[in-house]
Image (spheres, rainbow, N blue to C red):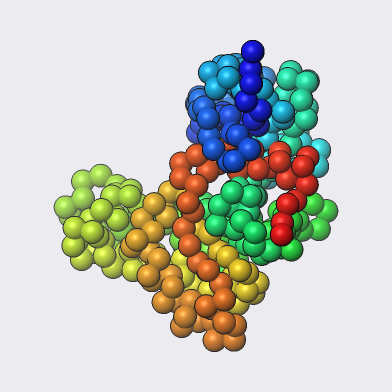
Length: 316
Ligand SMILES: [Zn+2]
């Protein structure tokens, strides 16, 4: 007999789908994952999610009160349908909320994964008991969620504001969003890799492409080119964060995602850029920090999506 009340959590990404059980203190009690294998179709993925959640809840001895989903966007959080997502070909207009609600006979809620991350920080992380928070995830792209007055901010017609695509340098490279030199195209992890590749002398020491993680390791080891690239990446991150401080003056900006696993390298540069650029607001009033939720963050975010939707915002 299951005796621990908990929330089922699903994180749908382009390469993997994770399922977990999260308790009401934001603790991850069980974890499963599977390749997304989007080409195998939506129904096959939903069957795997169903099996993973059943297995995880049994393993955690948990009674599920509901299910939250964070999904790579765009998604419609009101209807629960998936939009035109680059990494999920053929899934457009499919509805995981409806599917899982029928399978489990539970209430299900879904948000864009960046909004889910912001809700996790507001509920159980650095934004707890704060009224304004911006959460930025820096990885293969840059996604961000905004909490204002304690609730998730939505754009017109329920759209998701794309802070990751505000322009940093209009002479920069072209992004798929249409702009040149937006924050994502300059500061996402692969941008570091591309810049290092183009700066390497032909026939130089790097035989294979360097990942962002490898560049950070080389910088720590004292490699001059890698250190210059870390400095450049930190400045791009810092300009974007400074713009958010100037535009929103939020209480907290939380930075997460794979690139920010090297927060020790980037945070001093980000902080210095904010101090230099934000002369009209008090930058000390905004706490800039990296996420404390760890690798379980996306699933904790999915649980926060359900909790905020069905238990209401709980802000002091
Ligand atoms: Zn863009």
